[in-house]
Length: 142
Length: 79
Image (cartoon, rainbow over all chains, first blue to last red; front, top):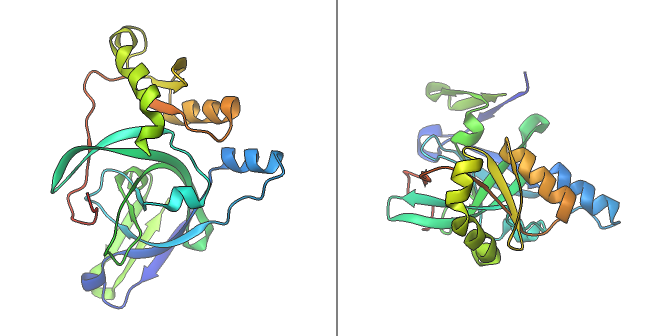
């Protein structure tokens, strides 16, 4: 079973943060390759595993860096607003240990945060998350 | 970026009642105001969109009577 374990100096203070890379999905990689265009380099980011997030989020601007266009629109609720429409993008998520999956994520601003992404329950729906607070580490298996 | 899909969203909304009768629960693919088809999964609809149109904007949306928003309970998002 593909999995990775992350050790954080202070898991309680920092949260379950993992270094991931966001890449174009396989279908878009095929389009780039067949037209002779270089495939955009994946974008690295710190992302928090967030059980309070319905879906996965990437920092605003990442999709443009990857040359991606929206494939959907969804309404979201946050603590300060309701029914905000956000664009959705198909992406490939690359976790440590080369654990790879594809997802449809929203793009939203995460300014002022120490993270550039949230891994939400859409991904967790496919995974086992083991959070070991007293050893400051967590594991995700798919 | 949702402005990019404004025409597609308009098409979806204008045909919602019809789609609720014919494609309830399915995922529809819309591009340039044209309803391309209805698919069993979001992944199927997106893959057909890329195969047919290339790497361009298109709308894939599930046909449901009431759309439930995604919820984000923490203050991470600047929205």
